[in-house]
Amino acid sequence: MLKHELDLNKKGVVFDIQRFSVHDGPGIRTIVFLKGCPLSCHWCSNPESQCMDPQVMFIPRNCIGCKKCYEVCTKGAIDFNLPSRVDQNKCINCGKCVESCYAGALNLVGNIKTVEELLIELKKDNVYYRRSGGGITLSGGEATAQPEFAEELLKGCKQNGWHTAIETTAFTNPRILERILPWLDLVMLDIKHMDQNKHLEYIGQSNDLILQNAQLIAQFGVQLIIRVPVIPNINSDEKNIEATANFAASLRSVREVHLLPYHRLGENKYEYLGYNYKMKDLHPPTKDEINNLKAIVEKYGLICKVGGID
Image (cartoon, rainbow, N blue to C red; front, side, top):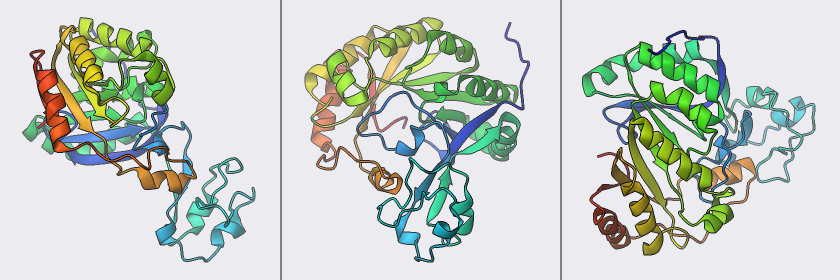
């Protein structure tokens, strides 16, 4: 029997809460984005999620040039010669510049929240979860990078009777998965490449742990959906999609594979943070290309959806 002791005071770093989502699990859902990720995908659309700590992000279109931020910064981190305005090597994320910026050009990405604070926030949408069969989805970053916080938050969600899901890379200690799986109704697992060398090149880590954990999740019996971010010239070749579909079909609890076409919606965030975006010359796959890959997946007897749950 599951133990329901809940630590409401457990703290974590959250960088966004997105309401009324219909593509990240069944029904109407609220997505909680946790900071921190052990991977470094070249195409990451949430680069602000990679660092575990809160960060100051500069939005240039809002800046009015008042220089209040420069006046209040005691660390010399404000540099008007930088496109990102903030020298992340000097910034201690104290938030003084953000407080002084009434134009909203500087924002602190990431807030420390307790489980109790988050549950109070999530309860505001309880009627939508109940009527639509929706619930809560943990995302990131990588939610398992904050394992204790993720576990306690999921416990609290289940105590409220909500459907729970996680979007994960599964790049984590298997013992962490064993702790959080009992509190999950759905796992949406990203498999980014089946070739270990290319996985290492474009994602920054081997895929061994991910594939092993995929088997662990499947054996546990929780509903498991495999998702593939389709990145042209990196993992969109037929050979890789075939290998991914073959692997997915071997997992007993997998019935669906979702193809997630590459998009450039997060590109401007790299500039805001002073990061280098490595995919500037890449364009999203065409509809015909996606349909061809969809047909490959379906050959393995799997349901294939494009862009998430319909």
